Length: 154
Image (cartoon, rainbow, N blue to C red):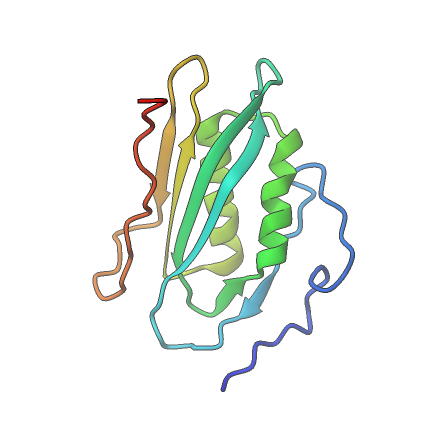
């Protein structure tokens, strides 16, 4: 059985304060245990929050991140802290969504990554943001993200 090397991590297993901004947040990675095997990893953050850059009011989203690792995996505690760092961050939905994806891509250099950011309505209009690094791998099972189109109470 493969063992994941966690020796370089600074946050896992330690008391770690929530970062105050995405720039301050430290995303960490661990070596992928199954190098050469193509598989998909999914992270779901159903209670993501950020701030409207114009009003300072909170915005809420259900975010789904799918990726096919190459040499690295994102360490999940650091990802949670990174996503939490947006709570005090003012940015438009599109900016938050793509910034999250690009930061993970810069860290991992995965074979493929996509993000689906399903934002709850602001001003009565929900905004969904989708971004990916390239074509979906044909030989990897990539399930639907399972987030329905916003319907309100109906």
